[in-house]
Image (cartoon, rainbow, N blue to C red; front, side, top):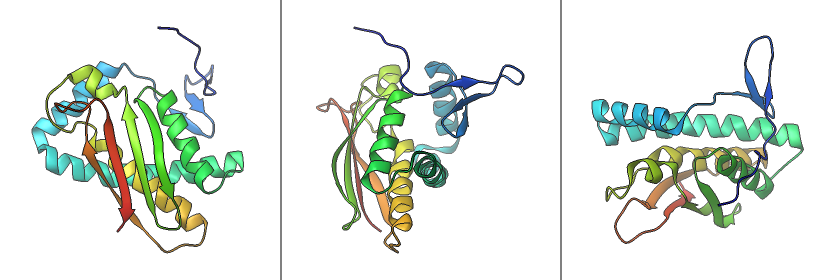
Length: 176
């Protein structure tokens, strides 16, 4: 394993301690802390209800992030989606690879390798990364909206690296 310094720009305000990357304030927490909290909430609410809540929150957050980043970096279209995948990958969630994207059709396929959830939880034979689904639809819809399209999408996780017989996650975005 080779190691490198983070590729994303991180600034820390010396007076407030606030971390910023690009145009947004960030939090830096250990993976086990986040996932242990995530799993405790799932246990309390049930996976289906928690997934629904996270979908909507993630959708809204991805829309906001893509809007701000597109403006900051002068990006549009597929470049915004690819920038989002790159930044998610650089933040330690896993390696997100856009296998397919078609803005006209409102479709995309995103492969997830090296999932933080799978590294923490192991082969538990279920889809663990459902919190990401709203992110992909929110990103796609913000890009579509910026292009003047009324098309809206939904995203689902079709497989996880935590499931037997799979070594990576897969997410599919389709028109709503």
